[in-house]
Length: 293
Image: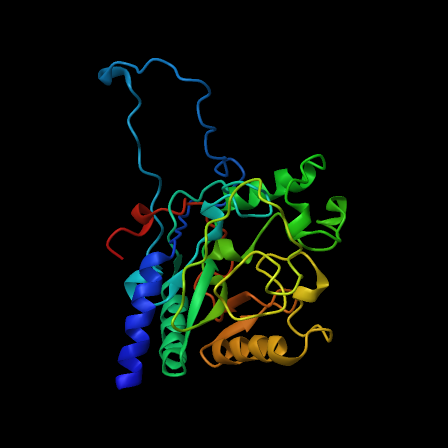
């Protein structure tokens, strides 16, 4: 029990320093999948108070969705898509706050896995959870813009952007939008926070040695998160030693609580059976979407 309390104290310190991320949902029809409005240009004079548009909260997630932090506050959250450190080079549409939202069964399963990991000196760290359809639409628009390759040096250095659809890296629907899929990794405790990405900094390939690629406080999985390369395949034979052992440890731990790994991405897991197996939601990632849950 002393070791458990020590791990929990260390984790709480790390989690407090780590960024959080949230997702929210709406129904998945094309008419509802609208990108977030672009920021205003310039510095216009402020409108009179009575003429200013009032903020209207987005639709809430249906019953069955919860904030992961309400189920397990010890799981580290580094919600990437609220930042510019993405393969798009900017924040993704629909990610309003750094909060992890999942279906309740998936969140509870992560809690069970986390309890086992804490006893062994590890913590889960989530990068992405529920993903609104408008975010997927943003991915699709970006993939079709072959001129925008600002983040190629890190996320897809060996892949032609025009092949992202054909090779399966980008699709028009994502299991994340159903709410039971999560992207995550392992962190050895005690954990230090990951430094913020600085837009414009020199990019290093996501499959470079751990000491050379963008720093991450996770264990070495052989590639960074969202690495568009076959080296990200969970069982790629070129990944050996400690890196392979870390991937198998994550896969085994999550498999024991009901998660199934996507073979093409070592970080991607779906809880089965899914609560919403046929519905792609589009509510935004926002604390208000799951207020009180």
